[in-house]
Length: 203
Image 1 (spheres, one colour):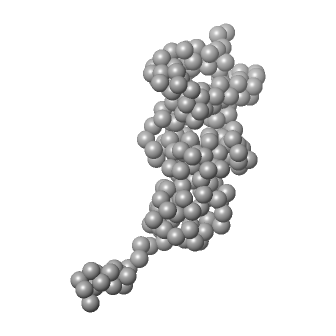
Image 2: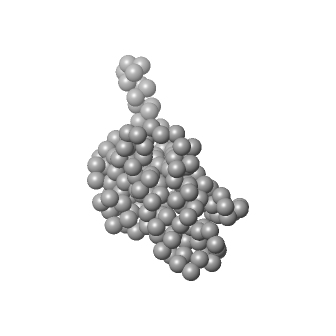
Image 3: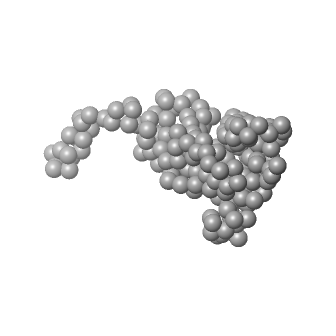
């Protein structure tokens, strides 16, 4: 037996990675693909290839692509914290803090941004993603609007969330050139006054 054959034989007899690490590898690969390609273009086979496993192993953890997508869409606690802290501080700077929070969450480190981008891309074709995106964005804004006792808080939260999701979609999903290339501070300066007027109107 050659040295290479001997090494191969020892590798085959070695301990295989645990199911926990395999599952995490699958989730990591799926998270990246859903964020970049969206729900429709991502396949179990392509996720398996990126994770370095057989497609059947992916199916052991997730029965179908919908279940895999649902697992990927778990929103990191850090993203929730960004939106919670956006409503802490002077009322007159609320719009600026909220716009910064949205941009930071969707354009931050991959661990935080990828699940949100996957949710946003998936919302175009996946009912579960649409529901989760709507709940995530509107609920974060609704909490803040209610804290300020606005009579039409729900409508204001819905309007603000629609504007902000549209901003992120144009900038990070569709990639409208001028918007995608714009400096974040420039976007904040332009959009913040509108969000301010919706969520914290002058009394």
